[in-house]
Image (cartoon, rainbow, N blue to C red):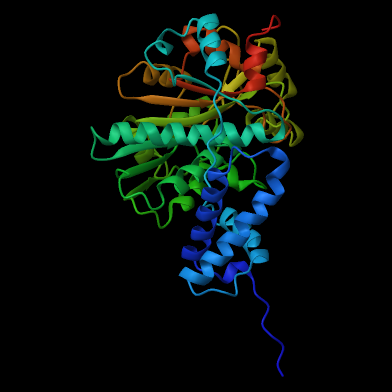
Length: 379
């Protein structure tokens, strides 16, 4: 006799996997008031009940109680489970009061504190960022035929784009979208996934009508060459259409963070002997604390003359400030910890809260540890 084929949950249809997951959570929800000591028994009871239901309603007697749990993991693998990170509204209100965020009173989502900490905080801040962007898309979709979204570079914006694509994948109510790359993002040749144009692939196959506006150019140029590059064939159309963008998704980097893309690129140029180390020192002497879209700033405002390179990006800091002050335009700023080392970016975030010249966001999303640091005596 031939050997029986081994069962694997990946072979099951979406319909079965989703039905099992939905039934399991519903079963546990009905018994949520039971004592914690009975949790294991309740889970086993749920699995047995679902196995019985599958046999009676689906004629799948082969899906025993032991096979229910692998199907739950399969549901998670297929992104059927959408977790909504908790928000800490009291901390958000206190930050708004301390830093004089006037529009918080009218828009309570202007500052959002995600009640998570530790290694997962970076990803959960990005998740809330994606959910916030989707809410803004739906709001603008009632007024516009197509909503234009600008995608910044880096891991944070990448994770926002990934979750956003998942949220709209089969959403028939999602308005038509236009995705714009805010920069070429090619600062690191060994990490191309940080470049905005790579995020477009997440939206392949989504139900909504999606248009893409790529930006192809050198990563950085000298100030003298900037206008010429903007008129080049790979960038001209992107710059001409920059005014159409309704929502910008971006993060920030701290000058003290070794994982910041701008800092890494400047260090690379120095190692390659293409940049005098004195140029970096001039930025540091100018008080460089951070950058948004590779445009550096200190505690007072943008750093322009001292920066030795000019990143090719659709918006300068002043452009983002104007955008944030325009009706029906939004800049969603992700202020969570570094996605690679976990370092908080509070030192770079404070000027964006305190200086009108740098108030370039309409929505700020941070983790609970960053919020605590912002409210501490040190801040």
